[in-house]
View 1 (cartoon, rainbow, N blue to C red):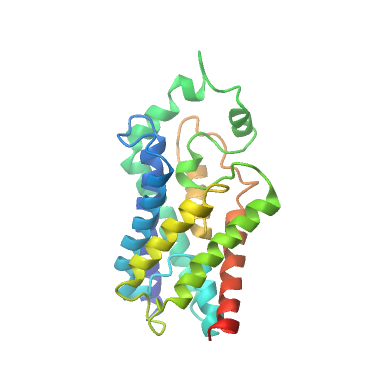
View 2: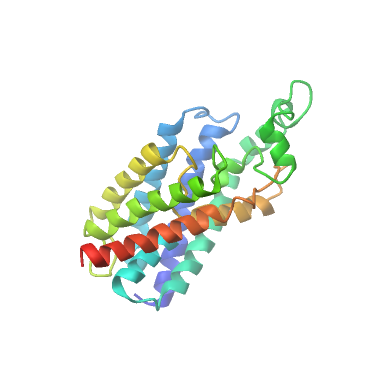
Length: 264
């Protein structure tokens, strides 16, 4: 795989991943969406299918890492870091493009949601709740969950540990199930297996933090949230933003090390 193939494949694949994954979050969250309040199972399935679709599309070009934690885990497994910067660059750009596409696809729903007086202010508004106060102080705004993750209970050690554990499971599954075909990417069934693993992680470990398990899945859309002209969007919660970046990278590195010790 050439550097240009890797960059293009990771950009396209990660854009599809975030478009479909962020799309299900928008569908479940935003007013005037036919899927509003569909629930956590819909989100977990949506993200799993997003991984499957993105992996099938990008495998021929880049091997479908789509996640810096995957790239780090494979680099540790193979002792080859030469293409890591190219993977990272494509993944971050793709994540930002995907988040912009979610905004375009749900533009009317974003506008309706963020101008609803019950959500952002006015008679009967929820602006005295703890979350609204937090948003006014730079924490999570009312639609940040469409773009990025956030904890139900803010506890740095627990939140970090949850992301490490979830990503460790993901990477160990990828590295040990023969999904990386001699460095050339996922096999025919690999994308489907990985999708089921992501659904499992979401259902079993996603409750505390929203299971980023992917640094660019969280960081790229969070940057887009901060830049988009969304009315009454609130803060992007940068105080939390390092956890879904650092946690998955640690989890991926641990999984790569465990693979080399136990399975290589």
